[in-house]
View (cartoon, rainbow, N blue to C red):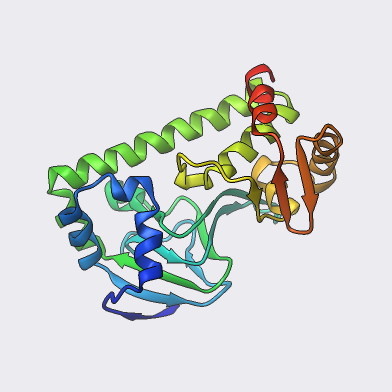
Length: 240
């Protein structure tokens, strides 16, 4: 899958980690211990970091910290239709669920570009979990993800498609899984990927985005969506 070394993180790697609110919520000593327990993997574009159904001790498995590149978390149906659940940016940590409950991986994780990836082996993760500071941080991570999942479930059952699109754009503006306090105004994301996140066709999404563009809420370009009015998107979410 990849080549690995003991972590010698560059300034860019450190900056990516320090941009993540979850990581920086821990004391410096805990952050250093987590990074020190990891190996640094260099992963080629298109590589599957893990597959749905992989066991806890699959080769290269562990708790992952992304320090360069982007990863797609997705699920593939038997008919070949794909659902993208999240796109992870540098600074994010993931893969903890299997290490906590011992069950197989729940989804696929695929490198959208070449990656630099920290991997904390399962045994080292267990040792980290014995520290109450780290275990509390993991609990906070899981709580944040449950909140996000509840929000997506609410979207699917209660909100119009226009409001669902607006909500997902706002989530992506915070870095998707990162959920930064800072909102970005430009998303580098193909519309096809956004359609897969929402579980709609590319044509259906295009109709909604074009309507938002006509209202001056967004601007559309090749592989990018510029958010012109975050306030208008927030109003759509509240009223949709």
